[in-house]
Length: 291
Image (tube, rainbow, N blue to C red):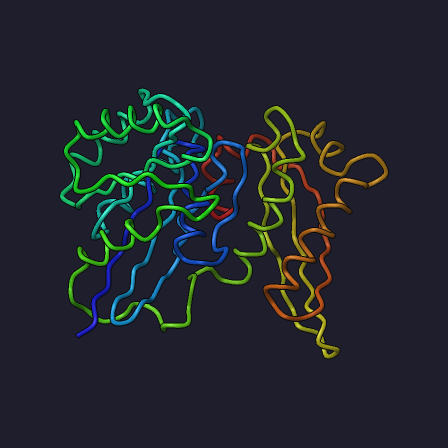
């Protein structure tokens, strides 16, 4: 008899949720960045091991919203928690437990799903910091507590063991060889956005959205990817393009190289930059941009 279940991966912004999901699944299914609020959609990473399948649902970081986009991201997390068999609550071992972490803990305590706490980034923390976090988190009385380093792949097996024991009997949700549910368009859009995140300063990373308009395999076997980059202000357009188009070319080149590895074919990436004024605060614009 097979077993399967969904696990929501939750926490405040920038605690390493996406990196942890990638490490648990064993391949890159979610983009990562040192910028807070990198994740804007739920991304499902699938791990099939023997007769069990775990579907890890990477979620945006729960935070105090300042825009309509922020409100939608929080609702997305709450909706995900209501539909999963368990939750993986990620803390940053290198930082003290704060109000944002406690907000997530309260939300998880009110749900019926079993919760495993991952104290992540132990590679950046002292032993004393890790022990202190584990002791403080233990007061929440969740199902399990595991120190991990998602970046270096340490502590993953105890997390998997916890959830493999928790998931109920049932059929697999995905074929055994599938590692993600993302469509090619969504995957390409997120990879392109990832390449911008570390290159942009101030508010620009948060006010940038990417929509892939077209993916087409030409007769030659070349995969054409056409994408639109949306910014909120005309002044941002030049920053995203860069001097003489340098930034746009650099992003296009990095995205092309990664997409070629994923698609196993030669790829041509065409990027167009457009202005969509205050899109984070306008429901109609959020709908059109896929949020």
